[in-house]
Amino acid sequence: MLNRLLITGANGGVAKLIYPLLTEVASSICLTDINKIDHIGPNDDVVIGDLADPSFVNDVVEGCDGVLHLGGISQENSFKNLLPANFIGVHNLYQAAAKFSKPRIIFASSNHAVGGYRSDQLIGANARTNPDSYYGVSKVFGESVAQLYHLKEGVETAIVRIGSCFEKPGDPRMLSTWFSPKDFASLIQCCFDADTLGCRIIYGVSDNQTAFWENDQLDGLGWLPSDSADSFGGNLVGWQATSETDGLLEFHGGVWVRAPLIND
Image (cartoon, rainbow, N blue to C red):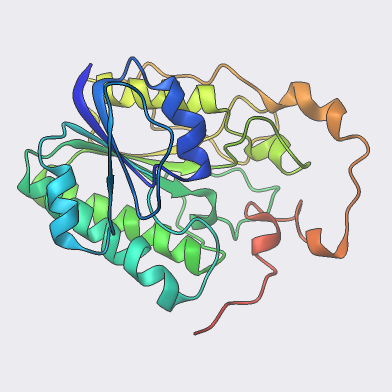
């Protein structure tokens, strides 16, 4: 068990799903976000601040022996708007990790780092990145920073390319991309418990029959997903496509591939 886990982006949707499931991961948790956080356990604390501020990041990383990095803008945006949290913020995090005891990091990457692949293409961890958006580019950048700091400083990272982490699948694409909160929480536990993590790419996806991704870097983790989107298929029988869902089932990244870039 970790002594102290840092969770960035703790006010986000994924963090709110995952946080209650992490009671066995760490003795205490530090929750941080740029916005107010109102969900907190008795042994945990909250620190509000900006990941783009290196002094703030240094302060919250010092004393932590694990980091779950969920921070940053989680939707497509302009490069200018993504730059502070998604680019500068992740760089600040790794600089701080290298400075303060090199805590193991779980970096929440995204399927949008490879979203440009077509849905009939099954890919593994070594497939080249194929981002579908500026947001996807920010995750490719974060993955590269993680790899650099592992090579140069020995900081270990699980790069988790999250599919769709919700309580249950909400559309037909999620029958392929769904990642249950329980499966994510168990992956987090295994990543922190592993004797050696290195820097590996893991697809954050449950045991879905039509998954787009093959997890071929799980050696030594002792993790396999236990949930599946397959049981939810019947709940989506009445789902109807619209002009807003054009391309949803055509690409790994769904509708993001056909969406125009948001320019500054």
